[in-house]
Image 1 (cartoon, rainbow, N blue to C red):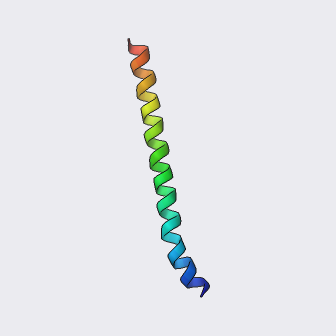
Image 2 (image 1 turned 135 degrees about the vertical axis):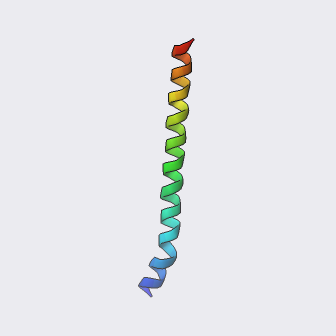
Length: 41
């Protein structure tokens, strides 16, 4: 039973982790681009 719960829980956890990582990466890239374009002009 514990294995069954773990099996259905893990993909959700992985999905959330990947989504959070993607969001963080996107935010970092956006901030870097914003700062770079500000210093350029």
